[in-house]
Amino acid sequence: QVEFVESGGGLVQPGGSLRLSCEVSGSIRSIYGMGWYRQAPGKDRELVAHITRDDSTFYGEPVKGRFTISRGDAKNTVYLQMNNLKTEDTAVYYCRLVEGGSYDNYWGQGTQVTVSS
Image (cartoon, rainbow, N blue to C red; front, side):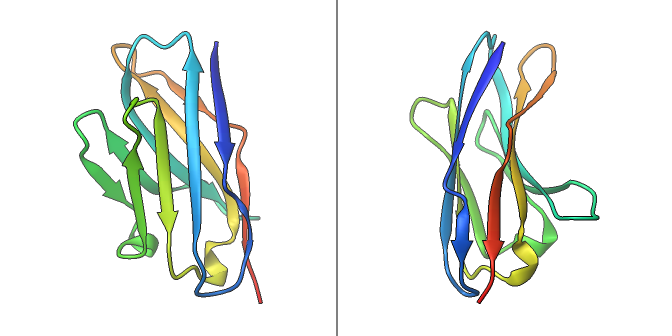
């Protein structure tokens, strides 16, 4: 059983900032990587940012230069700093865990981010 605690979503005006956090716990052998994905109404879920256990990072094209992913000292927490938010960033943001060894995927329940004036 893997548990997620996601926080930081909300309503923000265009040009504003938000910081999402995701902490995982439970029966996890090891963490291969963690990341954030998002899904807007009527669209497929897409990569926002992903960080591996050796701190390599990957970003979706729409967020490059505006979003930054990082891990906490305990390595079971991932943060997403989102700057210069745009209306098209509005979506439900999901935390993803890739378990080491099995490469099984686990997903959080999602947190809503709404960018609107």
